[in-house]
Length: 378
Image 1 (cartoon, one colour):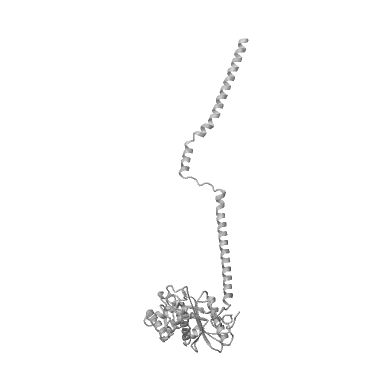
Image 2 (image 1 turned 60 degrees about the vertical axis):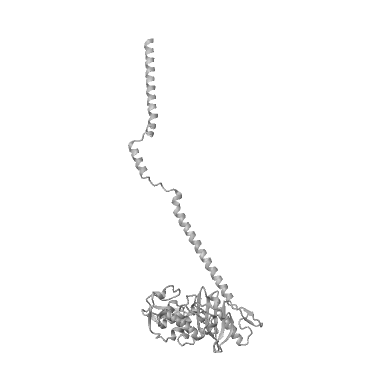
């Protein structure tokens, strides 16, 4: 019995040991298996990895990257708004500056001469008031100084052209050479129009290409025409005047306030040119029936404004290039009274040239009426 019990105990122990041993082996296998899977990748996985390395997939957009287009659009909108605001403020500043300039220009300046008389103090390089009826200079400032005259040149261009007695209904063609660097022009290459309309274009809105066409199509061409311009100046006694081109774009076109005061009187006396130079609006029509409305650059023609009230503009011409400054030659008349040539050269702005001419006219009218120092003294 004892031996049998011992055997049963030993057998049970062996069985238990076997069970424990099996469990231990199973445990060991279970704990090792994930490690094996992690380190030993199957061939399919290796192949996929290789393909992924050859063509890497795009990473998913981060929240910051997704927000970038919206931020860019917002920044552009802010930049545009800021630029628009700057432009608006600049426009307001320019308008305010122009208004200050206008108010200042409207106020005449006077000074005392050596005899103590109150005379105009013009804000320009040179100026003159000339009486063409008596041939007397009523007032002047640097009147014989030789200066670039810009489009006042067109007075001589027009006078020289009509002196040849052309047929004003003759039609000519605008070329590309006429248009080259023409600055101010209403014409196009190939336009066909009459001499009459070309004269209106040259003298009313100061069309540079029109002046070139007049010279080019005249007898002998442009070079011969410029020679005749200089001969005309000499014949009229304009000793300070010299011309290098018919438009005034060439700064070598020079004259003086004294010469120009005589030239505006000569030009206005012409039956063709006088009426043109006191025309505020005109319509040019090309042969192809292109309609070109034009307006005068001479603001003294604006009747009903402070500049144009109380006087008649018999003739006038403006001019400007950087070398000359703002220029004006005009023949003004007291209604039913005398005429005075008023010339302003080298003003700092367009507004100043017109108001200085107006102040000079008022001064000479007041002087002739016995008002010491003229009108509008403040």
